[in-house]
Length: 242
Ligand SMILES: C[S@@+](CC[C@H](N)C(=O)[O-])C[C@H]1O[C@@H](n2cnc3c(N)ncnc32)[C@H](O)[C@@H]1O
Image 1 (cartoon, helix red, strand yellow):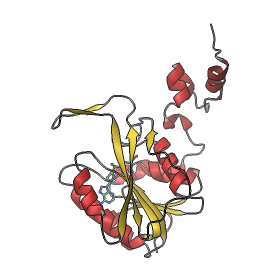
Image 2: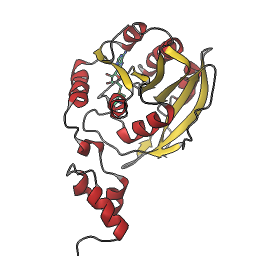
Image 3: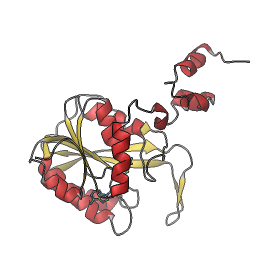
Image 4: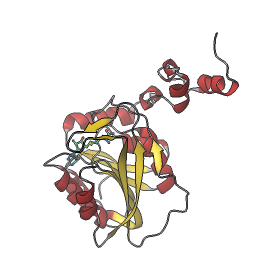
């Protein structure tokens, strides 16, 4: 059995080192680009079917364009479709040239290892994150990871991220006391994740601006590493400096 923590290894090999039926959650963001997405999601489906506990969740980002193919790959004898979450895009929106559509949200797919049992926590299926690309060009927001992990996981659970990138899912898991294992194939990206996961104290400014700061325009407070207490006070009292 592979140790908790992150590993510089192809996830296909990494997942084979995990005992079958021992993982509560797989949370991940595979590369959804031409030539790579199909093999990535096939590895994910195979690994998830084996390592998840019965009732364990697979939560994965997915590009719009590949959604039909990814659904086909993930729907296996072991995995059942559970839900799609819409993650509203903050900041600039991408124009999907091949469809002339401006994408305002990103799909996040949830599958469950059989048997399907609803989560006992109420969960909202439209979420908004904060764009942050400080650590990886495909970095996802830690706000989304925290939202989903707190609804589908519990402290003490084991989460695996087979496509670690800069380690957003693992960092979120670490913050809420969920054990984690991550796999990354690129040595530079692996080092970035390693630094991010071992930084002390944690740099909260890297989480991006909170909703309050975005709305009142006090973005400088988010950069101040102050967890926005001052900004919230101003928003509540309607105050601020003249
Ligand atoms: C979309 S990025 C993940 C970004 C991540 N969500 C973040 O917030 O930084 C996908 C990552 O998977 C890695 N990867 C691709 N194929 C892999 C494989 N077979 N095994 C492990 N990692 C792989 C890539 O190097 C890339 O860093």
